[in-house]
Image 1 (tube, rainbow, N blue to C red):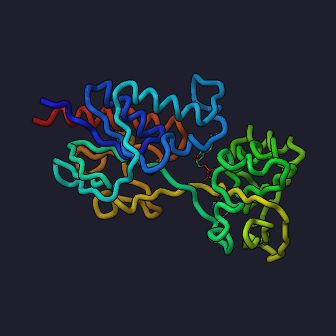
Image 2 (cartoon, helix red, strand yellow):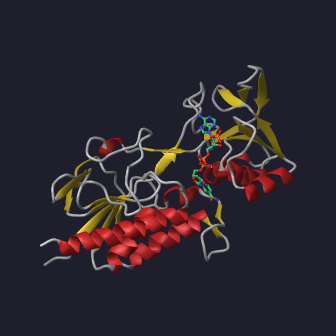
Image 3 (cartoon, rainbow, N blue to C red):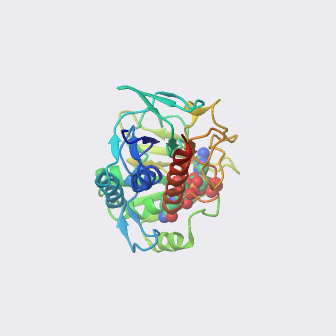
Length: 305
Ligand code: NAP
């Protein structure tokens, strides 16, 4: 009999780890990825909190995961999932190249960058508005930029940009940062990072390219303009699980409801990584989910006739 394959949606740390564990458990692993492998890690400048690894470029960690999964025989297909039907024992997943069938699915589709939603953001996206400092930062060498957000991503990106920009304006909607203290300390030490606390971006200005931003103090309504050429948005992520609505339970804000066993109410369907409701979203928790989901999926398949 041909080897049965699990289908894994998403080639981020959770999905690629699931593929590694699926292969080591003796199953095939077909991974669907609509974008680039590595997920958010691929757009992270440097990772310094993955246990056992002092420091590694995000792109290098993404390549390592991809190569490890591929070397074990996982098949990574770069195509989106268009629709799926997960209720029956044999699940059907539709992609542009056809319909895949399997008895075990692991959804590790991650989360996407949140948008500000202010005027100018959509129109100037790709013309000075960016959601990835590590991808686009080099275009702003010796220029002035802004980074919006107060979490780990925003502060890491501010540090990354400050190495090449003349000035980086870090804009956060409240007084205290959400980022870990080690990043806050590093940001405070950089002379070319200027903090704008209790400020929100109400408009991104520019005709063909970004020329500035309008800031507002939400408490006083006071406004100011900053002239700059790049705006990096790092105000968190949100899941995009609309494809599964009606088949799998979702929280109010759209995350999959599943416990630490990554199991869903549908037999043979598991969820792993940032799209699952959880208290800590890190690479280490995503890879842990991938390992758990694939191991339990293998146990599930082992028990089927
Ligand atoms: P995050 O931790 O959710 O932080 C988002 C930040 O954006 C918060 O400071 C939030 O403000 C602000 N924000 C949210 N909505 C906003 C809006 N509409 N307008 C203005 N500001 C808004 O997101 P993240 O930094 O992208 O990180 C995502 C996850 O990845 C987190 O779990 C994070 O720990 C993890 N991560 C970890 C590392 C690391 O460990 N080195 C690096 C990157 C990311 P408030 O604080 O006021 O809510």
